Amino acid sequence: MTDTQYMQLALELAKKGCGSVNPNPMVGAVIVKNGEIIGQGYHEKFGALHAERNALAGCTTSPKDATIYVTLEPCCHYGKNPPCTEAIIESGISKVVVGIKDPNPLVAGKGIEKLRQQGIEVIEGVLEEECGELNEVFFHYVKTKTPYVVMKYAMTMDGKTATYNGKSKWITGEAARQNVHQDRHRYTAIMVGIGTVIADDPLLTCRMDNGKNPIRIICDTNLRTPLNSQIVKTAKDIPTIIATVCTDSEKQQLYTSANCKIIVVSKKDGYVDLNELMIKLGEENIDSIFLEGGNTLNWSALQHSIVNKVQTYIAPKLFGGVDAKTPVAGFGVENPDNAFLLTNTTITVLGDDILIESRVIQKCSQE
Image 1 (cartoon, rainbow, N blue to C red):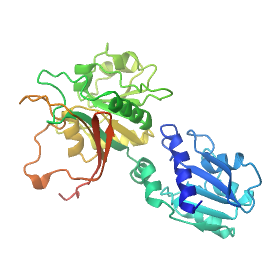
Image 2 (cartoon, rainbow, N blue to C red):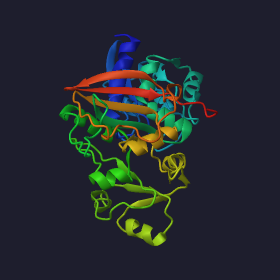
Image 3 (cartoon, rainbow, N blue to C red):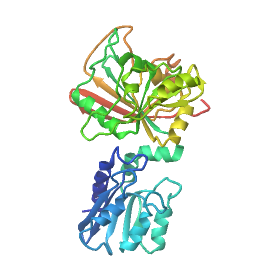
Image 4 (cartoon, helix red, strand yellow):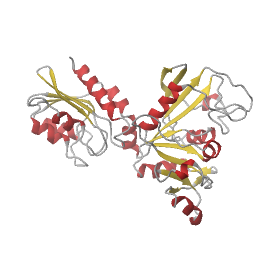
């Protein structure tokens, strides 16, 4: 096998940590000696052993003079675990193949430097793009200290998210809906607006085997979330945050007594200031948000430039209707030159439906 093939195996191992390691990165490691894999592992859970130490612990023979393939630069600082560079040096491994450097300022090339200082050969950049894409959330969070936001919606082929009377269950089929629950497991939090809560009374949970429920975030400018809603009634079991501009302590107490956490932010354009909210959520160690809001919140999120990726599920159906809802509301852009631009588009077929995913090209602040 080649370096690329071993790194591809490490990537597949890393993906197993999806949804369980946030806000840490997903990392996989493979140890090879004399052409044979003698150890492999991945970062399984936040706070647990890192991939390199798991791979070393699972070695079937001595790793002395072996090569380790790791998707992300080994850490060289003390956190919840001691440095992985120490474990590699002590093991006698003679060569380290790294997928991509760690952007964390505590590492950022220092891990590679430390290994080289100990006479260990280090090769960088094997499947670098793939390793970077795997941890796009981690890279964004480390660099900005704000959550990576994925805006998701489902629509018909004529661009409708509901019928003229507001009915939307179900636009897409089972395969697409299952994929959504996998993403609810993957991302740390899920966010909707008060309109969605009032209209649908959703639970916003992950309904997949061994899935974890995301932290629920409600953008509720004037604190109107019904106290008898499913979200409030289950807040004692599922972490729930209500973002509001309401400072009425008595009103807030109605929610905090039900185990909801209140985050107060400023008002901007009549609604919750989403930029301020992202900063505060980042301080809560929320590295990623799955935005399943209505078209008003979607427009606000785009206006505030907090959206990093857009997921569009398209069903082979036509609803019609001048007043039927579309994915993004608001005033809209004035002319085509002002459009929000997307790039790096991928297309996935899920049963009869299609998922289109694109990254958002962030506009210059001067614009």
